[in-house]
Structure formats: C-alpha cells, structure tokens
Image (cartoon, rainbow, N blue to C red; front, side):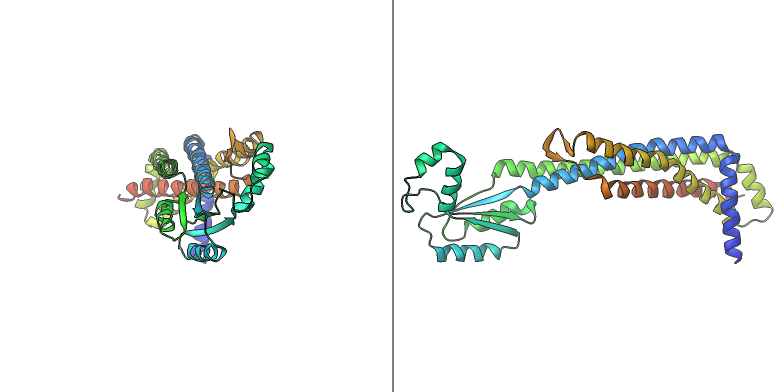
Length: 299
C-alpha cells in the first residue's frame, strides 16, 4: 500500500510539475514532437519500401523450357523433382498446346499462323513457371533446375534480377539505417532538452536530497514527468500518421506514381506505427529524465 501511495503522489507531483514549469515543459514537448514527426515519416517510408520490394520479389519467376520430345511421364517426373527442391514455393505447368491456344486468343495474326499447326508441327515447348521462397537464392535454385534431365532452358532474367536483388537489399539497409540514425538523434535531442528542464530545478532536487528523501522518491516524479512529456509530444505525430497517411493513400488511390509501387493499406498499419511512435516518445522521455536527474542525486 505504501508503494501505491508513493506512486500516486509521484504521479500527482509529475503533473503539477509539468504545468508549474510550463515554458520548459513546452520546449521539451516541442522538441519531442518535431523529432518524432521526422522519425514517424521515416518509419512510414521504410515500411512502404519493404512492402514494395516484397511485392516485386513475389513477381520474380523462373521459367523452365522442356525438350520438345518430353513425354507426359517425363513431365510428371520433372514436376516431382522440382517439388523436392527446398527453395521452390509453387510451380505451374503449361503444355505447348495450351500455350499455343493462349497465343491464338491474344492476336489475330498468331491465330492465323498457328491455326494450321498440329501437335507434331508445334515448335513451342512445354514450360514450368516456378516461384521461389527466398529470392536471394534464385540463382542457385536455377542452377539446380538446369541439371534436371529433359530441361532445355532455364530463364529468370539473370542479369536484371541479380541487380534488382542487390538494389532491394541496399534499399532495405539504407531505410533501416535512416530510421536507427534518426531515433538516435531523437534520443540525443530529447534527453538534452529534458536535461535543461531538470537543470533549472537542481536546487529543488538538492533540498529533497538533503532532507533525507531516497533516490527512488526523488527520481520517480521526474521519470513519470518524462513519460508525460513523451506522451504529449507524441500526440501531433500520431495525428499526422493517422490522418496524413490516410489522406495520402486516398489521394494516390493506393499507388505511388504507378501501379507497380503499392502503398500499404492504412488499417491496421497506421495503428501499429502510432504505437511505435508512442512507445519511442515514452521511453525516450523516461530515459531523458532519469539520466538528467541522476547527476543531481550525488549531493
């Protein structure tokens, strides 16, 4: 009970302190707000870059052309061997007859040329289309497929796909690095701003220490105050996330510049990002207050 009474008193004192030192509190809240807005925007961009790269990776396909004289039994055997390859997620088979019929439907010219082809005259080849689980291993997977008997050619856009994979990995690393760097800058700025707030009250802390108050009793109201500042500083960034991202999504109809770049749907995405921003604000506010007040406890 004593602990809860002390905690309740600390919460009450923290709220009083925020309003009693309103100008300094406002400076801390403004600093937290500005930096968290930048962090929130960076996180939104990072998650959308990741989503874009994942969607692009899903479309990467290995196309396998079989020998012209491949029998149905051999096709089934090739299918079984493909399914046993660890990195193969799914595969689709198309016979050369089915490919011919599709091409005839797409163009009158193709229809005119191919209508006279018999199954024996058809120069097209049976194919498998393979989607992989890990796009980073697509090259090694293609090499394994090439070694299967009756496989004529394996294509996955080698040079372009390899360059895309490198670009995707670079984009992920850069976006992660930006967010981490911005969070570190945010921590530094907020802690130093809160330190200025605590510095103005060092006399108050020294008096409490001299009259015998424990470190816990002194620190707790300041830590709670830092948490309150973090929460207040998170309000505007969260509103920008919730309303700004929804407005952006609606304005571009879910796509950015082209239908290749798909934006993440607002819900529940905006709630997750809002939660991350709120947690960052609270933790940084508490750490800032705890770090700042510790210096003045050595009286």
